Image (cartoon, rainbow, N blue to C red; front, top):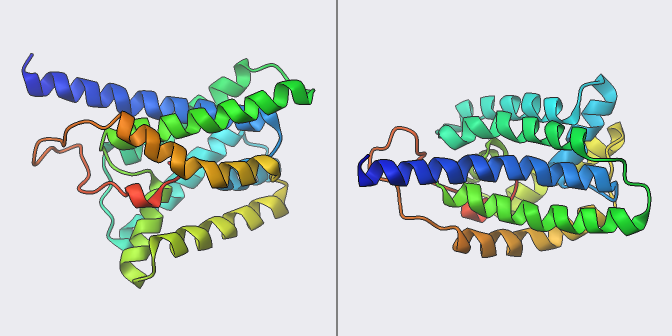
Length: 218
């Protein structure tokens, strides 16, 4: 095995570990029941409406968002496509294993653990540099096409999905606020911790740019 092959193996391991942990962290927030991250408010609301699991809804929404990349001329990477499926499957798998949390003494630690793990997972998969998640790519694509700031695009999109998700029965609360104010610094911290060398030029599985400024959501 060549040196580059060993590095590719490490990057792939980092990518899929990050995506799986992201799904697990989202499951912890669902189990805590104290408020979800913006896109999962929408996913939970749609799950209530359709009867599908929240992980299955996440996969469907992720695929639909990825289709929006076409008119925005965004180029997906292996990580982008993997994100659509791995996060939702990991979320449902973790929820199936978690017992029901009733008391705040259990729910608060679940919430805090979910937020910290979410930051670590985000840093892990973004640092692997196999392309952004479909939702992050939507924000950066809108930024490029409209000329508006990534911060404005992210705020507009996430306010829209939170309002829609809440109207459908998704959970917002103190966890939603805590996630919003802490996830950026946490992700940046772990992004530096997990950073790897740039992928070789011309790699067929690595997208051209990773939108660290669009953090966060796979």
